[in-house]
Structures are given as structure tokens and as C-alpha cells.
Image (cartoon, rainbow, N blue to C red; front, side, top):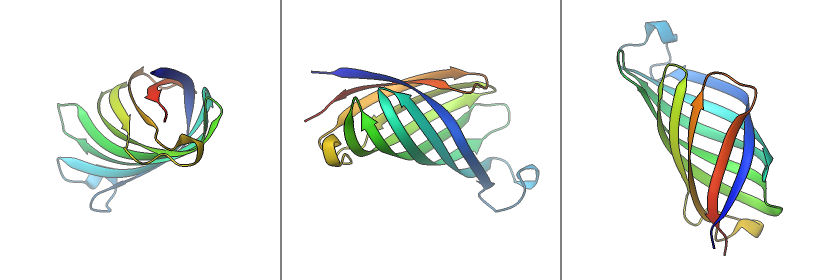
Length: 137
């Protein structure tokens, strides 16, 4: 049976560097960056995570990204860790992303976790909505 977890997340830290290690304004096109991003989740998902993400900024086109996020905390009261794989794109202040639980990544009470979701975010905010449709067991 599929269950949906609804939560919000806040960005706690964002450290982004260019592929070449030069300042962003000096990076050649298409600019490729690597970011370490930390999040704090509240709601049906309670805990913290860290995502490693690669982004490709292409003038006149959407920015595309891929990322791996490791979550530590509770999902509807079940404690453990799991990994999400993200793909998405951004156009200005609008972000669209899809993500899924990496098979076999659940630990503790979250062993056997399977799930997926998507996000559509606009603008800068203190908290963003997050939903994960999942099965456990």
C-alpha cells in the first residue's frame, strides 16, 4: 500500500563551486558547478540531509541538475536513513525536480523503503513543500 509523506524543507547551507575551481563569472560556457547542500525537514519527514549536486548552466536555456541526497531521521515515526536520486531543471526562480529512493538504501526502520516524488518550486522561501509517495517493507 502506497503512503504519502508531506513535509517542508529549509535550505540550511549551500556551497557551490565551478568545475574548474574558478570564480563563477570566470567559468567557461557551458558552466558546470558542484554544490553541497544541507536541508532540514519537518512534518511527516523529520530530520536532516545533505545533497551533492552537479548543475549545468547554459545561456538562454534551463539549468539542469542531478543530485544524490542522504537523509537521516524519521519518516512517519520510523527511524533510519535513505538516499534520494534527483534530476531536474531550473528556469530563473522556477525549479522542477523528480526524485526516487535509491533501491536498497534504506537502513534501520526504513529498510526496504521504496518511493518517489516530484517538486515544482517558485521563488525564494524559508520553507518549501516536499512530498514522497512510498512503500515500506
